[in-house]
Image (cartoon, rainbow, N blue to C red):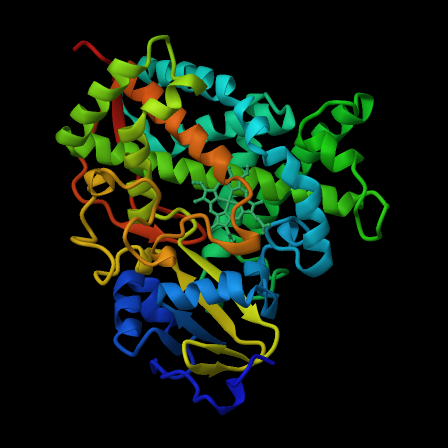
Length: 450
Ligand code: HEM
C-alpha cells in the first residue's frame, strides 16, 4: 500500500442521479460533464452506471498514475466489453504485457520506422489522387481510414487487398461501437441478440476471416521481417521460451489493426477538417510544403524542415486527442493528490479535458497551430502531463513514432498535391474509444491550381 494513503480522506464526490450515476450526463455532453467534475477538485469520485470511478484532472497527479506509481495500477478488467483484444498489447497486463512489450519494441525503433517513410509518402500521394478523381465529395473519415489502413497493412502485416481492408474497417466499427458504449449498456450480456451485439459478432467474424487468411498465407513463408513474422516466430508466450499461443497472436493482430489505424485516421480527419476551415492555417502550410517538398510526395529527408506541418499535428492531437481518455484500475489502495483511493477503483485520465483546461492553455478551444511557434517539445512551458496524447510511462503508445511520421508525411503530401474544401461549420466531437466528428464530414479534394 502506498505511503500514508490510509490516513488520507477519500476524494470529494460528484453526485449523479441514483442508479444511472453520472452516465447520462457523460453520454450527452462529455466536455460539460468533466467541467462539472472539475468544479469539485482535481481528484474526484463519481459513478458511471454501476461503476465507481475517480477522475484525475491535474497533470502532476496524472504523471503519478502513469509513471511514478505505474505498478500500483492495472488495465481495467472489463476491457470495454471487447474480448477479442484481451490478449493483445493494449489490454494485456503484468508479466504477459512485459514480455509482449519487450518482444515487440524493436519493431518500433526509430531506424526501423524510418524504413516505412517511403511507403507512407507514396501511399499518401496515390490516395490523394484517388480522392481528387472521386466525383463529388468524399466521406473524410472513411477516406483517411483507407489511407492509414493501407499503410499499416503494408508496413506491418503485408495485408494488401481491398477485401481485407473492408473487413478490418467493418470490425473496427464494431469494436468502436462496443467499446464506446457507456457502462450501463456494456453490462448487457454479450449473448443477448441485440442489434449491436449481432453487429459486433458479425464484424468480429469477418475479421477472424482476415486473420485466418493472413496466417494461412504466412505459414507458407514464415521468414518475413515484419511485425507478423515477429509475432509468429518469437518466443515469449505464456511461458519463458515458449512461442505465443494462437489466441495471443490473433489478439495481437486485431489489437494492432485496430489501435494502429483508427487513431491516426481520426487525427488526419480533424487536421484536414481544420485546413478546410482556416485559410490562414492552410496558407502557411502550403507555403512551407511548396518550399520544402520537391518530388511527388514528402520524404524522410523533408521531415526536419516541415516544422509548421508538425505544429498543425501537435495542435490537432491537443484539441482532438484521438484516444480521448486513459483508464486504469487500482491494484491496491493508493494516494493520489492527497486523497486515498481504495483498491479496485476505476481511474480515468480524460485527455480531452486536460488538453483544454484554461489553467494550462490560452483560448483552449481555439484551433491555433501558432501556439506551438518556437516550442521545441510539447507541452512547452507547462506541467509535462498537460499534454499526453500518446499516454505516458512504460505503457505509452508503442506506435507513437510511427503515427507522428505517418501523419506528417501524409499532411505535407496532401497539402502539396491538393486543396480540401467543405462547408461544415463547427463540428462536434463524438467522444468514444476514439474522438471522431459527430456528423459525417464530407469534403471535396481538388488538384491545386495555384
Ligand atoms: C495519432 C495516433 C495515435 C494515438 C493518439 C495513440 C494513442 C495511444 C495512447 C494514449 C495509448 C496509451 C493507452 C493507455 O495507457 O491505456 C496507446 C497505446 C498503444 N498504441 Fe497508440 N496511438 C496512436 C497510434 C498508434 C499506432 C499507429 C499504433 C500501431 C502501429 C498504436 C498501437 C498502440 C498499442 C499496441 C498500444 C498499447 C501499448 C502498451 O500498452 O504497451 N498506436 N496509444
